Length: 119
Image 1 (cartoon, rainbow, N blue to C red):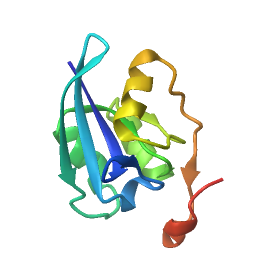
Image 2 (tube, rainbow, N blue to C red):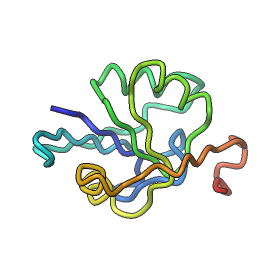
Image 3 (spheres, rainbow, N blue to C red):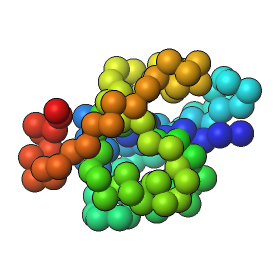
């Protein structure tokens, strides 16, 4: 079983990981989604969210963009990071499971400008 977290605004992939409204958590097995749940973002503070998701047992994180510090923490914990995703959260996970969702490496560098996050 692999747990995949998608930084989301309700059912859509969020532009910026730390400022998302919620995380859609999908449990997957044998290349398909077996269950899903949504948890509210418990708050954006440096280093907190990667550890929070790690404690939830998450192995893959999907987001539009993400700060370099968060990516480093996820990498240290052996969690795969996919950035540059967009659209419906569940469809993004299904694309990941098929092997068709690839990370663009989109890194957010200006946290104070989270509305203009992008390349």
